[in-house]
Amino acid sequence: MGPLSTRFDDALLFASELHRNQTRKGSGIPYIAHLMSVSSRVLSAGGTEIQAIAGLLHDAAEDQGGQATLDVIRERFGPEVAQIVADCTDSWVEPKPEWRTRKEAYLAKLPSKPVNSQLVSLADKLDNAEAILNDYRQIGDELWRRFTGAREGTIWYYRELSTIFAKALPSPLSRDLDRVVSLFPPPE
Image (cartoon, rainbow, N blue to C red; front, side, top):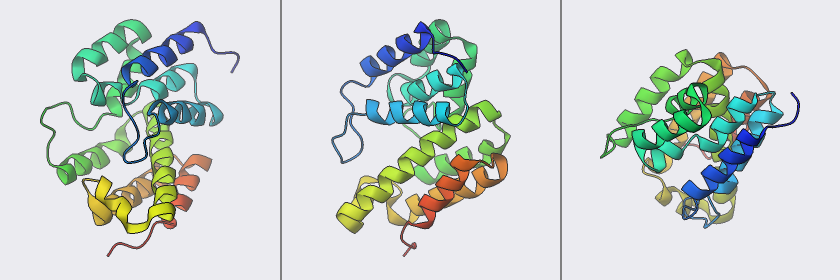
């Protein structure tokens, strides 16, 4: 893959504007750091510019405006980017369904998602898992209060993701996810 185009620059600016006032759960870290990390992981794994743009925008619809934001993404960045963003979104309705139900539905659909979408989702989940592990090492069990799924649900979800990605998208990224998740504490 060669240099990135100005479409990537536009997506980075758009993501930064959308998520400007958002921070990572409990850490105060600007949310754009996560989005840039996901995009970087996608590119480092051999992903395309379209996937890298989707990495920057993967939470835009879910966190910043739902279907209307997805429509803007489709118009500005094309249907392929919009499809990946849609595939990374676990709920389109407000209020969102109950946490466990939403996560079970996402897990059930994940193996049949296009590989382009799976790579972005995997990069996202790996970045999240690493942040969870790092925060756990710093603050211990206090961490689980940040998550709707608490300790048991969060660990369950990431172990399920790891199992699915190991089969659906065997790669260095899926092995990294497995390694990180294996360092999570056991469920209670």
